[in-house]
Length: 105
Image 1 (cartoon, rainbow, N blue to C red):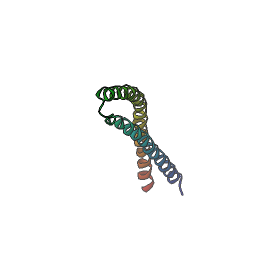
Image 2 (cartoon, one colour):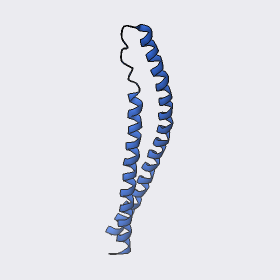
Image 3 (cartoon, one colour):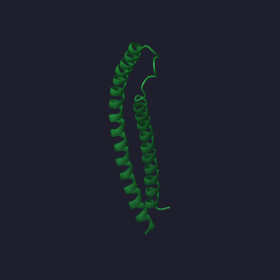
C-alpha cells in the first residue's frame, strides 16, 4: 500500500467522521424544531367558564413565548453548528475525492 493509498484511507475516515457530525447536528436541530412546533398547540378547552378559559390561554401563551425565545436562541446556535458541519464535510469530501483520483492513476 502506497502513501497515497494510506492518505486516501485517512481522508475517507475523516469524511465519514464529518458526515456523522452533520447527521448529529441535524438531529439535534430537528429536535429543537419539533419542540418549537409543539408549542403551537393551544391548551384544551377549560370548560364552560369563559373567563377561566381565557386566563388559561393567556397563561399558556406567556409561558410558550418564553419557551419559544429559549428554543429560538438554541436553534440559532444549532443551525450555525449544522451549517459549519456541512462545510467541513464538503471540504473532507473534496480532499477524499482528490486523493481517490490521484490514487487511481
